[in-house]
Length: 426
Image 1 (tube, one colour):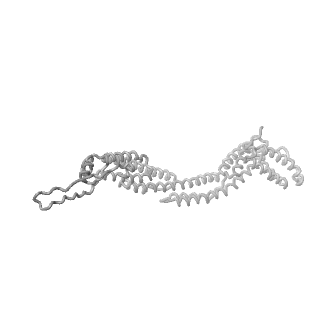
Image 2: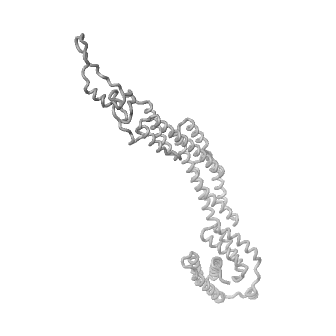
Image 3: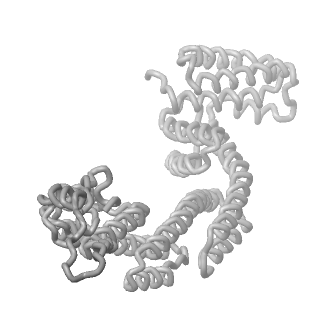
């Protein structure tokens, strides 16, 4: 049995009677039963055989009858061993595709080869059949587990709204198993597993896009800026997911629709959030920079602005909610003790532009110098230091252009950002 024993096949010799091949360790010929221990004497006798003497009354001597060699016949047990070895070899190639645990039958193969070489074919056949039965049982168990796994994964997808189905294929696989067609059953299981795996991967990507859309839709509700096209896109994706025989092409189409919806949200929300932050900045300026109860509100405003600048809309919206609550707790600002009355009394004769510049420019310059000193104290490799330096440059350019209101707004925004990131010592 070359498939089982490999290089362990025993040495053989021909029987001198029937010329059948026998192992050198065999006691007698498996075909005719002639003792192998007498083989040498038999060969010696056959080589020196003489003509048979004739009777006295015979006219001519009869020639000795020529010995006709009978065709060698195989031992039925040995043929069964060969068939079992071939079946075991084919089954091993099949189950390797499935990754069956407990499919290593190498010890049984070696033991069967040694047993057959020792002339115990019946025992070798028993070893091979035992290994084959164990391999078939392990294969059926593995197929059953893979089927249950497919059905469980299908149930998870269905709970998430994906109308995928492996029921028909599962019925076909069970029919192949019941009919004993393990190779066909394994091929179907592998194909179904690969198909469902692609569905799961594509759905995971689409689910991530839908999660981002839901978060941004919540942000749109917060700022009062819903996008009608997005709602239509979400409804279209849900319809696609309920289609029968869901394919990867369907999921790819849904991903494209979701990507367009995300783009619309990213275009519509930042301007709305920025407008509200500007309104809150004006409200906070009315309290004055040294007003301690407004510190938390200024910090929330700075964080919301920073997140918005970095494209983190969800985080910016969360800080915006906190900012609204903080401003609501502050109430209305107290009327200023100075400047307001003077402006009212002199409303008939407003100050000249030169006077405005002369009075406001020193204050803004001092504010810029103080903020620049705080920026220089930041770690040079930090993102905050890079952004703050840019704001200082922008405010300086505005001051040179005598755009005092814009410069004051830029410096105030920078102050709120620094207060949120690096609060000053009290």
